[in-house]
Length: 196
Image (cartoon, rainbow, N blue to C red; front, side, top):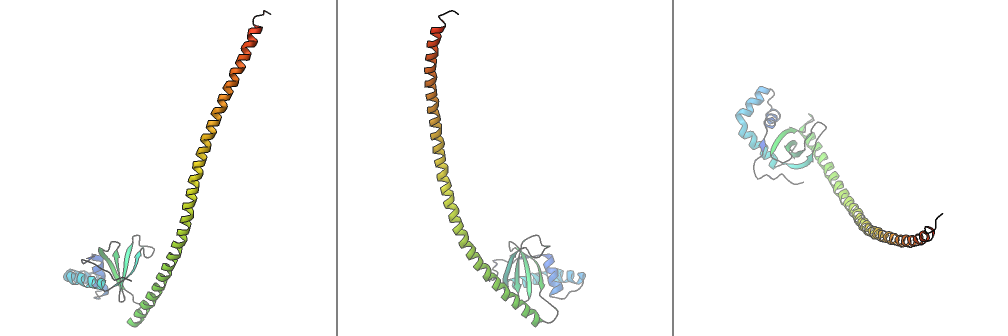
């Protein structure tokens, strides 16, 4: 996966600096962590940015069930760094540590990276397959839409033709009415001249 590329140093949140003091420098108390951050802020920022420069991109999106915003996850050795979605600031960092030794941690990270690579390859293969299927269905949809448009045009023409024929029928009916009126007039002329 691509290395992180930054043209400028990222903003390191206060939370991330405290986690650095606690987790990398071993400052156990809040006071010790805050004091370390206050006196070593520039060094912390530089070190975290260096970690990012030598990290691998892992993932972009939501992580876990409590995180409501998207983040970018990076791996630097056995350290995970989370940045905001825009890669402008480091949110936090933590070590992959099972408390059974660094060798185990490294092996675990390597196994997960292998699994991640396999799953990424599967995802890419599935994307290619799905994109191919989608292209086939999109072609069918386009053809159907064209056919629908042709049918709609034919329907409009038939509707217009039907209206025209109905108009002709009305005209024919008018001719009948005129003829009927003539007959009625003739009958009235004959009948009304005589008194009952």
